[in-house]
Amino acid sequence: MARQVKRLYKNHCQVCNEVIPGLDGRTYSEGAHVKPLGRPHLGGDVLDNMLCLCPNHHTQLDIGGMVILDDMSVVDTLTKAQFATLRFTGAHRLDPRNAEYHRSLWAPLGNETII
Image (cartoon, rainbow, N blue to C red):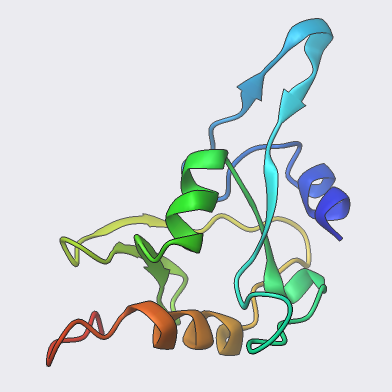
């Protein structure tokens, strides 16, 4: 699935649209699961749970530095500021339930929430 989502976006990050160039025309990105795989999360290894991200945005997603709202806007959890809207191509879409699950892990900040 990771190879498929990276191929779909030609290794361009769905958040910042950057691509990391390498030698011989090679490029790099990472397939990111929004709802994590494995226990206790049990996210699916399916396209509607995957994003093509640069390493920085993949890490930011994984450590809770950003969350995705239902309208597919991307919010910095520290500043609560929207800084991007996810780009999609073809029929690929993120299941909003996966974004909601991810937000439930990271968005609550004391008595305040992102949304």
